[in-house]
Image (tube, rainbow over all chains, first blue to last red; front, top):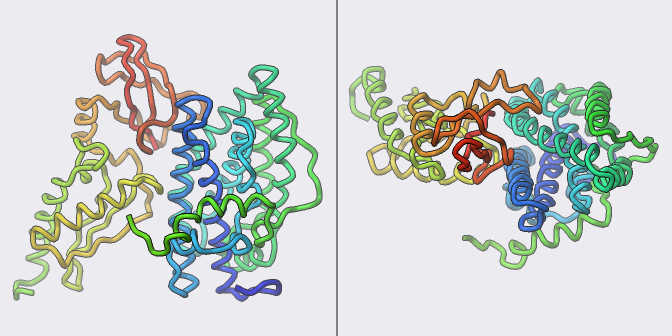
Length: 258
Length: 171
């Protein structure tokens, strides 16, 4: 893929779908790290189930991106044989799990974002994207119910849980500027009726965030002007480590089958 | 192809295939067939002379999706429908509303509480609806987890007979 410069319509389309795919895939991989380590069996199951849905959504998006690209890359090749700069996930998705509060805050922020994106994508001129979004939306509503429920229990729980939830929120908030920072891929897709106008989604996301934060008795941090650029392939230091683990098997034993 | 006109042959063949698919169990909840689960969306003899079978995944990441596809392929191949085409259907997305009445009864008999109400009324965000215990029939139950042993189930406990049970999620 080409680096800087304006992408053509076809290339922008592939990149747009990869962004959706990679955000789900990387977040799903992170959630998988909790298996066997969550604070309670129920939450272990819960986080693993969220991860499973996300990886399922990622497979649908990746398969489609591979078809659009037309170079014969299937979901596995895209997931396991790309290097970090080729991944186009939101930077927040790759942030480490931290403690349970950090995982929940990260989840809730992305769930709230995916809710807006998938709701809007149902009206996309791209019928395949609309169908995947419609399916993913049902699952995302369930995810948001889980993460917002936990945000409330942590924020309005004990002094310790409230402190940790607020700390996680203060730490992760800076990554949310990227959610609505439209670049040339977004604007090109919007012009073609494929993607929604990010600027129009931002207030809806913000209102949902405020509603959940009020219920959780947490403070909304002050926004910073700087936006991260994971969706352009410029990542934090954490993605490489995550990929090393995720891609280890297929890279060490190319073509291995069960 | 035999010389019988397609429109005369089609309904019979479609019916036969529906019957075959009703014999394919869900790999994770084997008391249910994939037809009762609502996973088979259509069986159509089309103009190309081939049978088209539409399958939809319950959840995007459900590992059973692949197993169902393999089982359907095998069932059709073994019964003279090797030319049938399997198609993945994403829209409209699967909903627990598509679970048949017979399927709901089988679930209950198997110890899994079926979805309590149509999805349309499930915008009840934090308030979960009361779930009837499949063992003793009591409505006094509590939710232990939104998630369970498979993507389609949540985990509950009956506060009357004290037994834990699975609840088929309403989605």
